[in-house]
Amino acid sequence: MIDLSILPSRLPPIHTEQGPISIQRIAEKHCYALCEAGQQSIHHVKPWFGSAVCPVTPALSKQCIANMEKARDTGYGLTYLLMHDEKCLGMGIINHIHHTHLTANLGYWLRPDACGKGLATAICEALKKLAFSQMNLHRLECFIEPNNKASIRVAERIGGTKEGLCRKRVFGRDALLYALINES
Picture: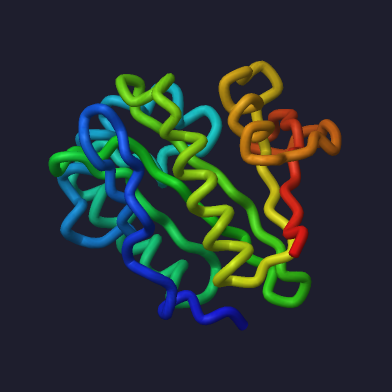
């Protein structure tokens, strides 16, 4: 089993015109920033991810963080937040890790005011590098709502290949499957 506890708590920052944006493993200290980001983002995140990863109250935020920490401890997945000036801009997730086949899912969400700035591509690239170089995974899968043109572009920018349509794959909804393969 991959020991997720030894992976870094911070990934290299994303450099922007507004300054560096840090990529930090989710932790209790992020409770209120995550809650505020969730309040801004719930309407476009909930239909695709559900509300568990986009909390809108401090209590739900604490529960989300506890669940993410348990997921890391049990080898299920890792969650990182995009942080800028104590503000959460979004989340990146590697989860559903299959320790025998060395595959996992890759997902993310951004708050609306962080969209269109290359942050989704940047966090996905950072998580892809982590997955392939430090976790030694063979494959990452992205499930994307078929009409979400922005997420399709992100998947393609990070080297994803469209493999098909998975019917009723996410909350009973169809999803496009994009896969990234570790070529090394």
